[in-house]
Image (cartoon, rainbow, N blue to C red; front, side, top):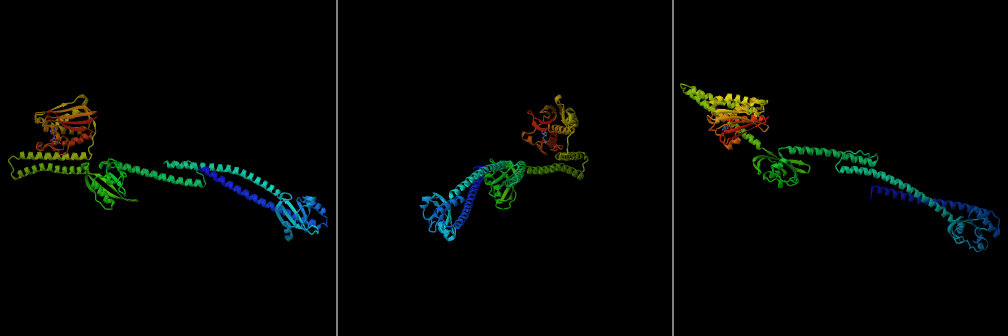
Length: 579
Ligand code: ADP
């Protein structure tokens, strides 16, 4: 049933019952008042008639009947004069034989009562008149008439009462109609407000908690609606904050390179970021599943179990079955939540850290080794010179100078790499003429190439005549590559330096006809201190750092360097620089 109908029915029934009860009470009270008034009136008239008869001289029966008729006409009631023995002497309603045939009235209740209490009253059906009558009797002091009795038909009273009833019911009906209209209007108004509040509530339920522009009013419904509305607004603000926090947390978690997985007190996974899914190779979303079902690594699962049981655990270093080459650190910490203790697992991939550490250690070992070799040689020759100085020490001193030079180059290359690593070398790109840069390098290394009878051939087509680079650094790159070519290529061979347009940039190649680089070594050739064959690279001038410096410098330009072998033999180094 609709709210409006309920209110309307309640108001309707209440008004109807109230009206009915009020009408009944009113008519009863009016009836009582009316009967009281009629009784008082009849009593006064009865006493007056008794007094009048008392003052009359003794009369004959016909005279008495006439007197009864005259009194009845004046008083407006039936008057009966009764003798001490109960005979009816006169009656305003009966005459002649009918009067004579009237019963003895001595035993009538009102007559008997009047004799004892001075006034008698009774109400009953009159067989004489055939109607309900109200009788009132009083004694007289007349010698022939003992009692005067007045009677009033009750039909009058009933007629008047019927009129009252009729009017009351008309008023009741009119009131009812007005109440009906008022109840309808009030219920419509109220239900409209309640419907508007319900619409706002539905909007809230659907998730839209924006503030409504609806005026709730100042009464109790308005106050309740406003209080609820304020609560919802507050709740909405908190929800907003919560979802903002969640979004922030989700963004942080998905951006983390560490794997994060949270389990609750029952061991069910509540949260797992992308990194942990990849690390643990989780196929299905692990949320709401038990961690034992998702985490197949026994050490990690065991550690989570111990933390959930309240134990303190150390960080765990491990490898995962998926990729045994990678090393992880697993840390599990307890999470105290309102529902009990949970646990958070953080997986940290430390493979790169370990590798960097290894590289650093190798580097230190390499540097020490590379420095020790010339130092040992220098010390040996210096000792030889001091112990037994030869006649001509020049040869010894030349060797010492060569080793010193090598150490110096090593230290310089190391310093340069350190600067490149620290990002201290900046490039200033300009349009460089390839011919000019190659010519500059050629001048520097020509003494060495000529000593070995090698020819340097330069090919620069017009569409690759200029390159966008830092000229000093490009010079260093080409000098390193050409020095290597001169060093490793055979004597009297040709070394080609060429440029060509490629991939929106310029590719510079240095090709020699030497032994080339074994295919397996090609990927490692740019590593620091990496040498293909240490016995072969006996040249004290080489440091094993040249190609790594080349790689650094080329990458600084946004370019790339690759090494390959000619099918006919010999190495090809290609430097590509973007335009
Ligand atoms: P190095 O100072 O020893 O030349 P690099 O870093 O320049 O150091 O070169 C690393 C190694 O690469 C060399 O030791 C050599 O074994 C190999 N290599 C470089 N260039 C050539 C080349 N043109 N032909 C053959 N091997 C080469």
